[in-house]
Amino acid sequence: MDKYALVTGADHGLGYELVKKLLEREYIVYAGRLKEEEQMLDKLAESFSGKLTIFKLDIGSDASVKAMKELLENVVPCLDVVINNAGILGDITKNIFDELDFEEIQRVINVNAVGTLRVTNSVIPLVMKSRQKLIVNISSEAGSIAQCEREGWFAYCMSKAAGNMQSALVHNNIRKKGGKVVVIQPGHMATYMRGHLDTTAAFTPEESAEGILEQVLDRALPETERPSFIDNGGNPLAW
Ligand SMILES: NC(=O)c1ccc[n+]([C@@H]2O[C@H](COP(=O)([O-])OP(=O)(O)OC[C@H]3O[C@@H](n4cnc5c(N)ncnc54)[C@H](OP(=O)(O)O)[C@@H]3O)[C@@H](O)[C@H]2O)c1
Image (cartoon, rainbow, N blue to C red; front, side, top):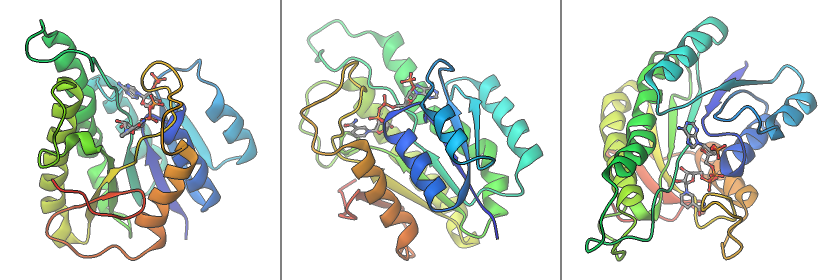
């Protein structure tokens, strides 16, 4: 039986690696790409002929997510796995004594927190038609209030904390119907999220993607009242 997956923010970085590894696990994958000039996915589509569909997606836009919903409803019977990966960092230099850029903070929250909910809301009927009914939200330790030691990163930390709350709310909606939300801290990865390749990172995005899929697909996920909030090795994080 065919299995279907959706990944957002798949242009490069963790999202691209998740798409690649889902294809290797024989999923039929729908990959949202923000920038059409990013070509890595096209090469993957050639290698996995007929198994990967790439479409333009801005999760910060109602219209773009609506277009995705219409596309998916016409081509897939269900979505077994949705990976909400797309995200942006925003300013990480300012603290409360600086002049904060509230428009930027709202833009980051609109993408990281509201955007994830926008996507999940649009595809939830397809998720509930599947056997796996799995939603994976890529969060961060930066979203943990219990572990917060930073004094800045307002936009990013607030957006990931809000994303964690919406994950819990969605999980409450679907768990009694056989669905699950898993919240993932992918680890510090060598990606371009900071605008340059982060060479100080602990993981390559390929390593983190493999760890994440081992946790959410290759092992039996526990039935839990709250979503699991785990790192790419399965270790729990404090909310
Ligand atoms: N890197 C880390 O150390 C780290 C740590 C913890 C959590 N994370 C999380 O891991 C996820 C992946 O990040 P990454 O490190 O792989 O960074 P990345 O390479 O910058 O990937 C983020 C992806 O999201 C896309 N994106 C940005 N805004 C979007 C929008 N409005 N709509 C749709 N797609 C959008 C980006 O597209 P473009 O780049 O083409 O604009 C990019 O493809 C993010 O949720 C991030 O918060 C990362």
